[in-house]
Length: 88
Image (cartoon, rainbow, N blue to C red; front, side, top):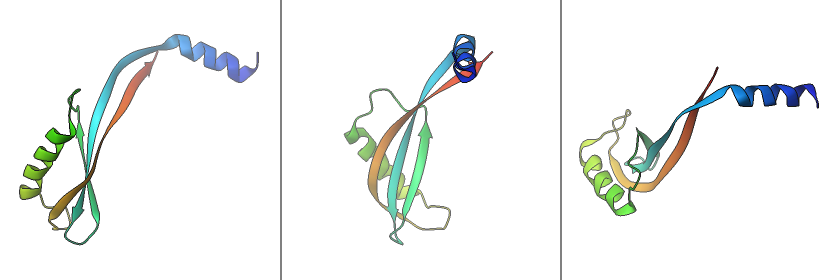
């Protein structure tokens, strides 16, 4: 086996899975016609689009982005999953 293959095999046996995290990313349109994305860590496992839309509507009433622009609509909502692995 190649040197790279041996290194990979060695590392594979030395790692331990710690956890998987889901992050909800909400992308809003703003009053300047630009997008603003908000990330919410540790998203619930069973979120529905209707739940996200309802929460986004409440957020839009109170949030102003860092430039002082109002959020005008939800463009998209997506959940990303990442896992953390510690090498020992």
